[in-house]
Every structure is written in C-alpha cells, then in structure tokens.
Amino acid sequence: MIHQLETLTPPSSVATPPVNGTDHPMRQVTLQIAFDPGGWSDDRRHKIEELFDSLAPTWPTDDTPDGTAPVVEVPLTDALDRGLPLAPPAERNRAIDLGGGNGRATGYLLSRFADVALTDLSFEMLSRVRPALVPRVQADSSQLPFRSGSVDVLMLANMFLFPSEAARVVAPQGVVIWINSWGPNTPIHLTAQEVDEALPGDWSGVAANAGDGTWSVHWRSTQLGT
Image 1 (tube, rainbow, N blue to C red):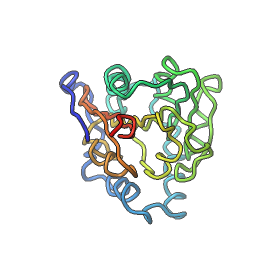
Image 2: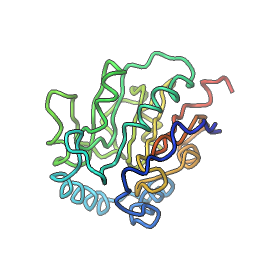
Image 3: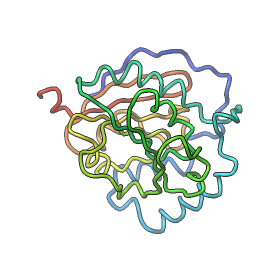
Image 4: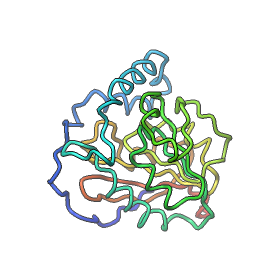
C-alpha cells in the first residue's frame, strides 16, 4: 500500500522536459522490464549499453546544468528528508546508486550514508564519475554483484527496475528509493503503485510529487509486523 504525501512544491516550470516521456520508446521498455520476465534480453542489454555509452559525453552533470537536464535534487532530497524517516526504524549504512550514470545524484547519498557505491551498465558513463567520489561498478542490474540482503538503501533515479534482483539484494530492513526527475514526463518512469506491484512479495511505502519530479520509498510490509 502506498501513502501519498502532500506535494513539496508545485512544478517549477523553469526547466522544460526534453521529451514527452509518455510517448517515448523507453516507457514501454521500462514497463516490460518491470513486469515481463522476458523483458530483458542480451540484445536489449547491448542496445541499452551502446545507447548510454553514446550519450555519456554530453550527459549533464552538476557542473553543467541546463534547461533540459534531469533535475534530481528536489525529488531525491525530499525522498530522503520526508520519505525515508517514515520507513520502519533501522540502521541503514550501505547505499547503492543503481544505474547512477556519471554520478550526478550520488553525492546526495554520500551526505547520508557511510558506505555508498555506484553501478551502471555503461562503461563510458562510469568513466566520467569523479574517481574519488565513490567505488564504481560496471554491472547489469538484472544480475548484480552484491550478496543477497546486503544493501540497506537501493536508489534508482530514472533507472530501470529489475524487481526480483532489487528484492534479492535489499536487506530485510532495507528500502528501495525510486526517483523520476520529470515525474510522468520521465521516459524511464513507473508510478509508485507500479513499483509496489512489481516488487515480489508484500511492500508498503510513501510517495510524493516534489518540484518537477516524483519519488517513492518502499519497504517490506513485514517490517510493519503485518
């Protein structure tokens, strides 16, 4: 069950979404990966890897903001400030920025968690992460190189959701944080309810609109004793 919180701020309308995400080809890919066991194939993996390798040289960073850049700061900080404290209390130290690209959003995790790492399928994206920022791991998120139950916070910002693998690596008291910087206009987008339905087992969570984006924080319902 997802509890919707009040909107943090209305959409800024200062930045313009670069595309209409609802009609973007990535929207269908996102849904297939989340809900169809056959939605991820070697061919699709190679195409996605090549695409983001090609985008890496011009992908926005914190140092090069512009009117079409995905603005993750508002929804991500709101998820951490308002959403995470509503999860059942637990010690959470290890956070993974899954599909974190060039590390644009990773810094927001560094100020909150003791052990942070970043993964991405694209080597070219990872090569643009500041080396001293965090450990970088090139990985296919359908087969993560992490032990089961070893991740306290799994953060996905504009990233595909591989539900079974996410549930495998997230600790029993862990959380999944889902960020869409342009809300429903984000090409790689799922609603909070879709994330909740895709994750195997019973999950609960909170969600909100924040700035131009949306976020949700999910945890296993067993943490609530239900």
